[in-house]
Image (cartoon, rainbow, N blue to C red; front, side):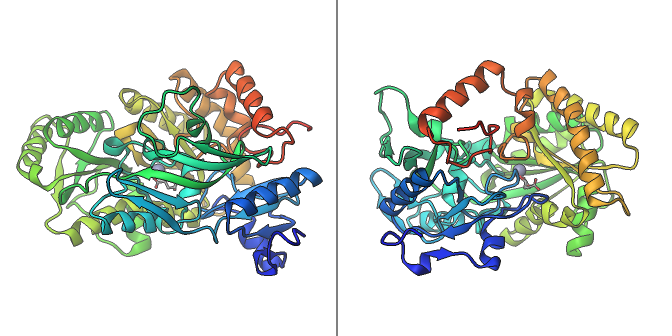
Length: 456
Ligand code: S2G
Ligand code: ZN
């Protein structure tokens, strides 16, 4: 296979490799790739695509394999293209404040590189130690500081990708301004490997923020989350505004043997991060929240170590509830709609699935809620997943009624593909199919992900 293109060490077909590189963090799918290849250059990626075209062989791009919608799952003999060996930082321009990474560079390697240049790459999330920048771009990863710094898309100033025509696209090449027609860079960002295999990314960097403070505020009623968001956003330069329910906190404290942050438990907690210089006004903001009856208690970090321990209460949720094989939804609505949407979902689940526990957490600051239903003790995983899948259309109808998104940051992949119509119109999906046919005329790029596969 691919003799003359790849060396033997760049091809794996053993069962352990197929099992490892044939999936991501999404469970419940068959994992059955035909082989894993590890290109080391753009030219090798082009040759792999050409090889796949000649044989009608579907390709699945694979980065850090931290995806949560099955975007990197190979279930039916696909050839997995892993970017593990394309993991070099290729260029850095201090004047442009721009770095060029191969797709396989780990997110936190990029973050550290930026800090070493006295600059900052602000997109961050719990999986940044494993995720690769190519996958972050392919899913337009969001994370915990979108409220201040935006999403991955906002930092991509150029990229190279191999289309399904085995052609290399060099999109925008790091320019800040470029008014020369359709910007394919932004088409490829968030395309989940279905329009092109991203091989290199040009990212702009910014000035590192000043020292940050973290506050956890106890909020008894969900409707007051937004009052607290507003009073802190007015008073401080908010870097993050996360939230989690008392159930989520209970699971993290139990799993990681941590102490709850406040004296008494409360229905919801907001984790707020802001510039250290705003400490005084943050206290004033909290006083306002207290006198408004919106908040009941709070704790503020007094050191970087304490800030990290408060963050651990939020970032540890996903790992702490994994043992309950949660049925996950990652949805977004406009910020003002969050409280009544959350209460509508709660009411629906309690009325129709009384044995389901709803574990809420997420990025309230950008309208993104992670709705995780914990599997009831003793319920079979398959039965639970089937019930979750049957429940999702009802949840998505509530999302659609608010013109929200059925996938805020985790992507569509396999998991949300059949529900795409709750967030995108028939006309839009038809146009997406047209783009897919143009960029991938042989239907070999991650077929069946994002859009239902059509017979080629
Ligand atoms: C988060 C991580 C994945 C999940 O914690 O913000 O995006 O849903 C999630 O558990
Ligand atoms: Zn998230």
